[in-house]
Amino acid sequence: MQLSVEHPTSGAVADVVPVSRPGLSLGLCLGAQSGPNQPALDVDSGFTWNLQATLSNVVFIDLSFADDSFGYACAELGIVYKTTNSGTTWTRIMDLGFPYYWYGVSALSRERAIVSGFNNTEGTGIYRWSTDGGLSWDSIVTLDTANWLSRAHFADSLHGIITAGWNGGIWRTENGGRNPSDWTYVQVDPARGWYEGNICYRADGHCWLTGITFCGSPDNGATWNVQHSADPVFDGGVWFSDTLHGWTGGGQISSPVLGWVHRTTDGGASWSDRLIETPEPIRAVLFLNETLGFAVGGNHYSGVGAIYSTINGGDSWRLDVNTASEMKGIDYQVVGDSIDLWCCGFNNNGGFTGCIYKTRIAAIGTGIRESGVETGRAGALLLPTVIRSLPSGATAFDPLGRRVLNPRPGIYYLLAVGGKLSAVGCHKVVILR
Image (cartoon, rainbow, N blue to C red; front, side, top):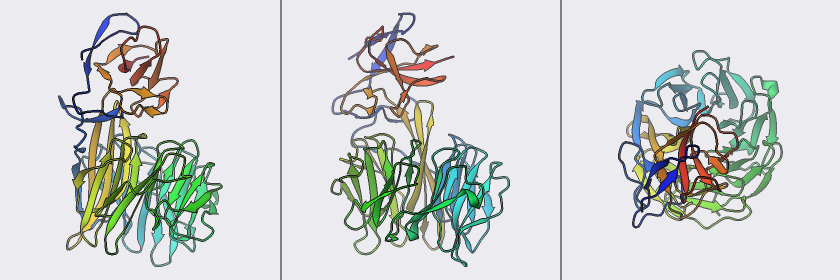
């Protein structure tokens, strides 16, 4: 069905095109592959991931992007790579060798980045900062004299966490973490159960860790609620799209090698059964909203690895790409009205080889509501209408379905609640100032 919408300010009729077709019902605002003249995503197809880098003698563990262009990837043996062109090329900017291992990286900006890990000879947890985009690095800081460190994540420029995963603890900072005195140790799990995989740390101060136990904090990691893992075995990786909707991954490398994903809709008070069982352990999960998400993993010992996606909150999954590599880290950035995602890992086919994959998800305009995207509702995609401010009677949402109270210049989706936005669904606009 062809629809038309009046321009929010001039009243002129703007063209729109339908995004639904027989057999297609997407409960998300992001779902089409990038590229010209490509159709909306089929329910039974996955996203196209491009192999950006294949690097010999590299064991990638984690990556982090400051924006859509600048990113860092860290690896064992004290190795760090950097990209300035969205991952098209990668340059090695640190190569310390044994006994240094980097297991976490967080890019707070193009200039400011931290790597965390351990000294494998001394058994200590370490970190290192750069404040000039990786051109130079501060001296290595020994933060934990008794435990290895792994993942690092910052919610903003001041609040950060570095996990001491094998001791069931974390180090946290509320003032940027440049110096050792800026960090405080918190014993998250009193039983010192380990946790592994990616961590989730939101700008509102909520954070979650998983492993032997499921751990959640409402106050930037100062206090924690600790309960049994979502899976009867253990978890590995966690993500929450809001404070209620969350997912954990997990998996085992002993026979039979397999992985799994669980979901909660009540903040972790209860969990679903396994939504999927995969032939490789799931190492990380990431959801862009309560419907669109990814699960990645693998096992280099048995040569398996993959990237999976879901467009219905995990009720069903698609195999996007069989990487045959142990995928460990995943990150994303909003690029206009699209989303870029990167995933890193490694394999061991006669020698370790690191790999980095990327996909771009273009926006399609379906029904958007304040808590995210509206399940099962078809909508219409405006060929972008240019306006200079948010019109009266409309609510603006970014490409992730998050409400924006004071939009800056950029591309948004407007949900009509009155006024001249008369068509059903949401409307794509470019807001100028």
